[in-house]
Image (tube, rainbow, N blue to C red; front, side, top):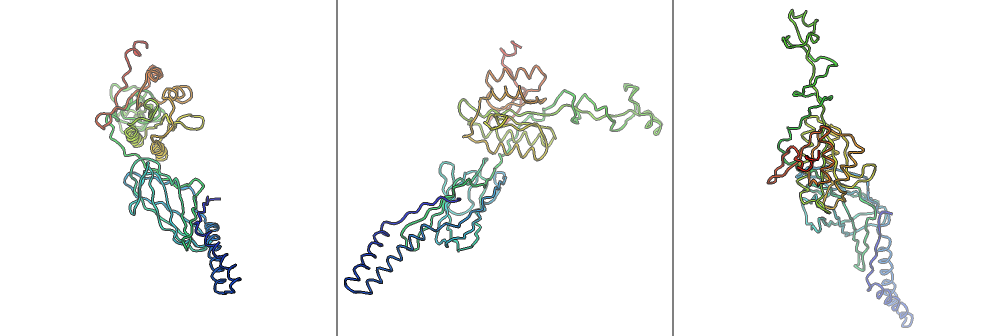
Amino acid sequence: MQWKKIVIEDRFLSILAFLGIVFMIGSFYINSWLMFGAGLMIILIAAGNSYYLKHIGVGLFFDNNRNRNRFFIGDKGEWSLRFLNQGLPIMKGNLSIYFDSAVVPVSGEYHIHSSRVDISLPFSMGQKEKVNIKIPFKAEKRGLSKIRKMELHIPHFFGFGDTILEFSDVINLEALVYPKATSVRNIDKHKSVKPGHNPSNFSLFEDNMGPIGTRDYLPTDSFNRINWKASARKMTLQTKEYERINEAGAVLFINVSDGYSVTSKLEFLMSSTAEMAYFFHKQNIPFSLCMNIRSAGFTPFTYLPLGSGKDHLQKLLDLLAIADFHSPTIPHEQVLFFYKRHLPIAPTMIHAGIRSERSDGYIQEWLREGVQLLELQMNNESAFLEPMKMKLKDVAGE
C-alpha cells in the first residue's frame, strides 16, 4: 500500500446526521413530508461526506521508479511526479512536498526549515486520469537532495472534514549536486620515481618491449640499441627509441572528522578533492579514495578502488556529493590500519584533514616503503599540496 490515510471528520457532521434523524422521526409525528425530505437530505449529505472521506485516494498511484540525476552548482533541473487515479475524483487538493535544500525551486513560494524545503501545490485529478507534476529547481549547494515526504490534503466538497494521504514508501527521486572544485596549487608535482606501465615524459625507465621510433645515433648510445634496418635505409646509424614509463597512481585519504564530529572544513575538503580528481582524470593517472565515513560491506569505510576513466570520476564525485555533516564516521586510524592490511598500496598518498599521532605511525611505514607522501593544506580559502612533514620524534625513531 503506497498511501497512509488519515481521515479527519468535522464534529458538526455527527451533529448534522443526528439532526437529520430527528427531522425524519419528527416528520412522522406531525405528518410533514417536507420535514421528512429535509431530514433525508441531511442524512444523505452526511453519509456521502463520510463515504467520500473514507474512500478518496483508493486507486491513487504514484510512479515511484528510481531516478538519480546529477548536477553542478548553478544547474537547473526538475522533480517529475507522475500520478494515476483509478478511484474517486480528487478536487481542490493540496500536495505538500518536502526535500533537501541542496536544490531549491526556481519559482513559486517555498519555505526552508532545518535544511528542508517545503513547497505546496494545488492538486486535482479526475477518475482514470494521469497527471505529471513538474517542479523546476536550481542546484544551490553540494549535497544529496531527496524527496523525504509527500502529503496530499483533500477537503470534502461541503467542508465537513479532510483526508490526508501520506506516501508511505521511500521516494526514489534523487538529485546529486557535485562540489565546486577549488584550485589546488602544486598538484602537478605529483610524480613517481618507480618503474611501471604508465607513459611519462620525465621517467628514467623505458618500455623495452618494443621501440616507438628511431633517432640519429650518438656516441653515448649502447651498441645493441642500433636499428640496423633503419640504418641501412637511411645510410646512417639509427638508434631505437623506447617509450618512457613509470608507476602512476594516487590514493586520496580524506579525514572528515574533528574529534567526535564532522569537521567544519568539510566543504573545503570536498572541493579540493574534486579538483585533484579532475587533474588525475585529465592526466590519465589512476586514483583511489578512502574517506572515514562508515559504509556497509567488506570495507567498513567509504572506499573507491584505484581506477581511471569518466565512470570512475563520476563515482568519486557521487561519494563527495553524498558526504554531509550528519554522516556517521569511524576513527581515521582504523581506515589506515585496514588499508595497510587489506588493500593495495599506490605509489603516491595524499592526505587531507587532521592527522593524529596514531595516524603518523601507519604513514611512517609507507614512507619506509618509498611511497610519495603529500598533504593538502589550506591557506586563506585556497589549497595547496606540500610534502608531508613528519614529527621529529617519528623521524628519530625510524
